[in-house]
Image (tube, rainbow, N blue to C red; front, side, top):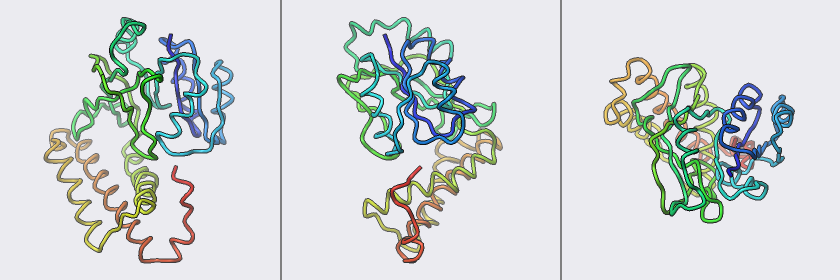
Length: 260
């Protein structure tokens, strides 16, 4: 038996399909909501998911909240914009979770822009541990880019759909508005500091890594766009960090308790 763990904030457009997807292998669904203002909670409850209300704590911290509420020891953690492929469903159904030496199972993630699957820039296979035994492991207690710290992981030959961005515009706006700001806040709180060259050098390095080393040039306009978005995200992350150091007014007006 498996419990599903989904964290949400204003995911009314995604939550119904997400719950339907995990129901293929889970008989218990827990949604940890961080204050949705849309119909997310109502939709989840109408589909017999149990909703836990928790102000956002950060990525790993938030995902671990569900572990206090799930009914089973094996937990499948997915984001609201992710869906199980038929191959993933079949792979999970074949597992003998009552008698396995593994404490976690990893799946390849198909990261999408619109309906297009981007396979370059390090976006595939992008293995992620999503099914794990909560008695032996959990997500790292960090605010960003958390992963499950399993010690004995098996990679399964199955994919997870990740509808990352609705279109190219969202690819850039999320980098500019959400990702870079969150990273800058976390870095500042950790005591990291930037200098005048940091934004440019980190932005350039991100583009070179994505476009050349991770073969973004083979992905056409999508590969170029992902590389440019990564560059923009990295540039803004350090530019915002530098701004916190240089501008007391900006620093005073920033809410460091809110990192979503």
